[in-house]
Length: 319
Image (cartoon, rainbow, N blue to C red; front, side, top):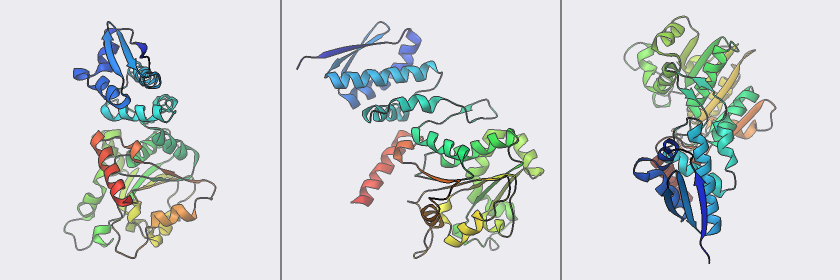
């Protein structure tokens, strides 16, 4: 079989350097995953090998080049994800993902979707009154929900942000723990604090907490309330019972939006208790204004090893 050659033009040394990565790490990933040979010639990269594989590698390199030109950072996770999309014939998805800023942190960092699944999740939150985001650790379920809440608050679409989690380890009874309420619930709610502080900055965050525009509380404290004109996030919802989930969803008042996030592979409920998240996504799937988005290991945006760890556990469970 004749060897096929394809040229990718990077246009300048800055683009070339970013595309190659430190010690050509980025290019080596593409070579390993596609089976082509690659040679740098000036500002060009020449790919040699089987016609379909060189076409695949060239497509990936050109899409990564578009990411670089958009001032986005490349990392191993994103490169592998782009290769997987190309193998599925869905490489155009990576450009759709890049478009649109969800929110801007207090330090000026733009928050954008990084995967097709994340884009689907964010679009679902925009379209629906209630959105369920279900998927493994590292897929950005909570972080993106908080970003959407901050965006809605800054745009005056809601008057308040309410974040809650079930405190399963304490059986929702926090009285035996030492300290005041804040001290008692801190271990359960810390990821939510961290995300909000990054978005608003410490000073603004403290002021919003003080005036009640941001409320963070365990799920048990939602009982008996009506939550109107608020963006409400229930995190770690796999650890709710059916009764708790019903209680939470029926707290919603006029002008409110709800996002429920959870990971059905990490249920900490006692044996025999069905997850309220699993139950809710089953019985509410045909209700207008409610949508469930299921993220996968392909949507993991933490360290590339997290993706591999999730896959390994999934294979073990299937076996």
